Each structure stands twice: as structure tokens, then as C-alpha cells.
Length: 277
Image 1 (cartoon, rainbow, N blue to C red):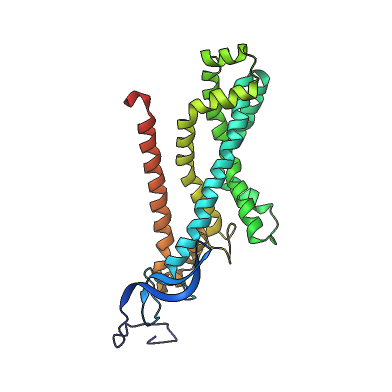
Image 2 (image 1 turned 90 degrees about the vertical axis):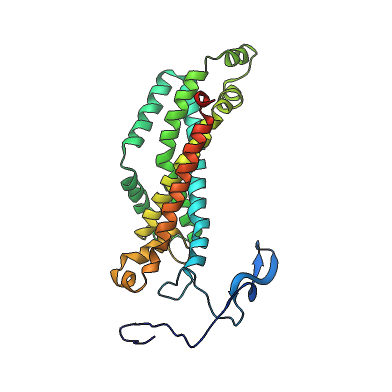
């Protein structure tokens, strides 16, 4: 630090710290079970290495991005799977039964779909108490992000069920005395598994962005937990951004992750397209 008052720094070229692979360092547990002190990379003299820089408290950005990936990606997958299960149940019953039941469920789903998604997230988050534990906050944020997603899944699954419920194998199952729920779960839903895989792949990026937006506004995951959106909240202060521009690394990680999911989704869509065979 050349000037502590203005927080000006300059490179100290009098000390050389050589990077090495598989060096000894602080003790940890590999996979939470195996005690170890071997790290992937580091310096033999114990000097810290910040490949992506450090935040204003001196914490390694690369380590925090990796830790944040666990929460951000877990929320994305768990929210979409929860929404998909709700969509299969509601949409399947709606399409298979039909009549007024189908009409009522679809009108309710349309109301949910028409709501502005992010403002709906903010409303649901605002009704939660402020003094909840990190575990409870993770659970509630997952549910909040799943609620708007199930309506779109239910509508799509209902359309597929309508097109398949009069198929020959479904009629044969009815004549054999099989009940409605087993027919739906064993004969109809497995026929649209490729559509469900596409739905999961293409919906995860939206949930990740929703969690990042809530955490960016300090309404989602907060300290001591770590998520990509929470790491992005440090960039709200222009003074911090001027002194530590590398705090924007989580934004590039989010963009890359969303791009990869969309690329995977559209690749699966082309692979599952029967017209392309």
C-alpha cells in the first residue's frame, strides 16, 4: 500500500512467490470426509494466491464464486424440479380429466403466467419475515422461484396429455381396468420425457437469474451464505467498483452459465426432434 489514505497500491517486486501444484496448506476434509492438507495450487512459502483478486475484506473471489455456485445452481435445479413436479401433477390431471376441471385450472395458470415475474418474486419475498435462518431463507427462496414456473410447465404438459390420452395404448390400458393415475404416470408422462428434459434445461437459467436479481437487491441469499447474486451486490457501490473492478467476475460467470444452459437446451432440442432423424 503506497498511500493508506487514498488506498493506492503499487507492485512490490522485491519478493517473489513461485506458484506450484499440489502444495501443502491449511487442513480440510476432501468431500467432507477425508482429512487432507494438499491443495491444487499455491505457494510453498504460504503466501496467498488470488487468481481472480480479492474483495474489500481480503477474501478470495475464486473460492467465493465456487462456493456460490453450490447455492445458485442448487436453487436453480431444485426450483425447476419442484415446479416440474407441480406441472406434471396439475397439468396431467387437467388434460386427462378435461371439462370444467381443465377450464378452471388453465384459467388459474394463465393468471399466474400473466403476472410480472420479477415483481411477483419481490412481492413473495416481501411477505417473508426478516429474522429467518439461512437454511429457512434458502428453502423459501427456492419455493418463491418455483411458484411462477409451475404454471407454464402445467400448461405445456396439459397440451401433450390432451394429444396422447386418446392413443391406442391408453385406450387399451383403460379397457384392461387400469386406473387413471397409473395410466397418467406409467403410459402418458414417459412419452414426453424428452420434452420434460428440455423444459428443465431451458428453465434453469431463468431461475438462476431470478435468484441473482433477488440477492443483488439483498432480498435473497445474504451473509454468511454465498451466492453469485450476493457477490454481485458488492458492485452496487461505485467506490468499491472503482477500487476493486474484479468484483464483477460473478457477473461474467452468470452470463457464461446461462449461455451454456441455453446452448445445451437447444442442442437437446435438435437431438430430440423427430423431424431431424
